[in-house]
Each structure stands twice: as C-alpha cells, then as structure tokens.
Image (tube, rainbow, N blue to C red; front, side, top):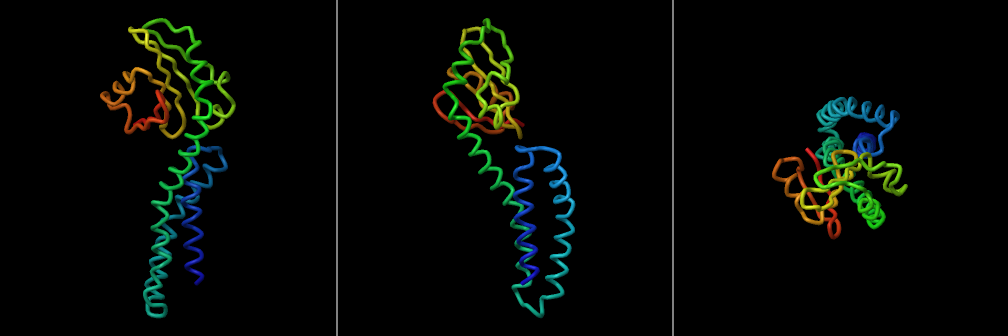
Length: 188
C-alpha cells in the first residue's frame, strides 16, 4: 500500500505544480517545478523497479503505482484547463470596463497604442493582462489585444478582421469566442 500512496502523492504534486507554474509564477514555484520535473524520471524508475520486484508478492496491483505516475501527465493538462477557465471568468467580469477604456483611446487610423496596464481593473491586472495593445485599422475599426501569460491573449475584435488575420498568418494556434466581440486566442 505504501508504494501506491507515494506514487499517488507524487502524481498529484506533479500535476498541481506544473499546471500552475506558468500562470502563478514566482521563484518559489519555479524551484518547486524544477525539483518535481527532475524527480519525475527518478520516480518512474523507482516505480518500475518496485513493480518488477513486488510483482510476485502483490500480483497485478504491483503496477498500480506506476500507472498513477503516468496518469499525472494528462493531469497537468487538466489543471491548466481548469486554471484557464477560472481566468476566463475573471476576465469576462470586467469586459464592459475594458471596452470603455479601449474606446476612449485616441488611436488614429492605421495606428496602434499601448494601453497602460495600471489603468485596467485590478482583477484583470492581477490574473490576465501583461500588455494591452489597441489598434485602429484603415477602415476605422477598433480592436484590442490583451496579452496574458502562457501564450494566451484576449482579443476584442468587432469586425473579426484581426482574428482572421491572426489565423491566416499562423499567429494563433486556437481561438474560442468568450462573448460578443471578445475571443480568447492561444498564441504559438
């Protein structure tokens, strides 16, 4: 039973630490992720050795710790997806305020301007925004890109032209409509 406990604990630690490291950063979490990543191959070797040695004594259950360790890899994707959904909800709570800030930006046709991140609502600043770029194309259509962490950006694009441009140029790996004119795009 003990190998099953250590494998389950390490698998949970692996998924949680690596799932949260990019979004929530910081030197402590980065060191923890380094230790977890370096320890993972060692834990796999220990799991294989334990399964081989205990195979006769425990039967098929001897492979369970090893399977738990392998299950941690898709667990990282699950933690990241849940974390991304939480940030999407936090971002969408402030859409009207962000749209008002974007519409007040004095951007001339064909130009672009960086919006000071300090002017964003505190909830968006803390979770989702590192850089905000506002553009006005030659037709006078306004768009904004809110660049976040882990390759994610939020795109305000009433005309849909910036979204199509990014897809055609291969700038974005995927996109999903949040509400109305807002999209969540994942950059390459």
